[in-house]
Image (cartoon, rainbow, N blue to C red):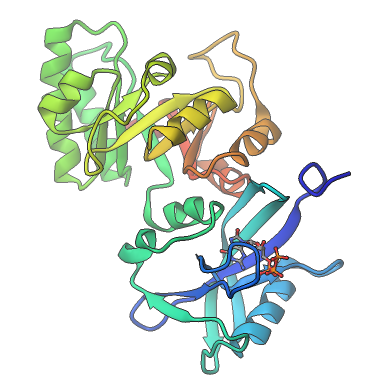
Length: 316
Ligand SMILES: Nc1nc2c([nH]c(=O)n2[C@@H]2O[C@H](COP(=O)(O)OP(=O)(O)OP(=O)(O)O)[C@@H](O)[C@H]2O)c(=O)[nH]1
């Protein structure tokens, strides 16, 4: 069996911070796969080793430090032309010693907001997103009651910490929806939350908000509809959708349904295995959707997701 089809290579990497919160990146040396790219320090797990032991060994060998392994951040299944890997990234809770590149690798302490400016391997794109972007994406339900009640529920979700919102209301009359969107965009901005409007490019443009593309819209686009500073995301169900989302430069995608959900009866869930298999062929941050609750964020991260997208579980 070729390495591309066989089981993934297990790789562990650490998020090491200094006292000011900067994060350590190492540059892959010449002659190795992906040479010149920046990565989170770490390496391959040896047979029989736990991820924590492998990471402690690698960081000692490569940097000369002793570490206490902390919480898992994300584990990214990724396929490269000649291999598949699972990049298991852990927060480093504490470390001792003096950081030095023992293998001739260049090192840099990067302030978190600069991470995306470093050229990195595809598997690291979701890692950087997991460090910097919200782990939950609220999709609003249709306003079935009064406008005031709907806006109060949105406010409650924002107060609870939701920081990324998709405004969506299938079948809402356009004039009512435009009024609600205006108030909702305002509420999201007050809370510093990212706001995207489902489907309606003109409304998103008018509000200077992001757009969340439906899968059918995505299929018809061959370029990103908005500039880089205005978010573009897309709903995906297949690998072709994900590849198109990546090709047009979407900031992130939503993939599912992962589990059964009453809002999309009759759709066959892809399960976590299906999610992980689809995710390994693109390098996008991807939220899992379909029957998700906040209790699923850890398993979502363990399958390479940015987190969960949900209506009911995040509303109010
Ligand atoms: N340590 C580390 N490895 C990463 C990251 N992202 C990523 O794709 N990888 C890949 O995971 C593998 C890590 O193995 P290693 O660092 O022990 O590898 P190596 O140079 O001996 O590996 P090679 O045989 O693939 O060239 C490499 O294939 C590397 O490209 C990352 O952020 N940190």
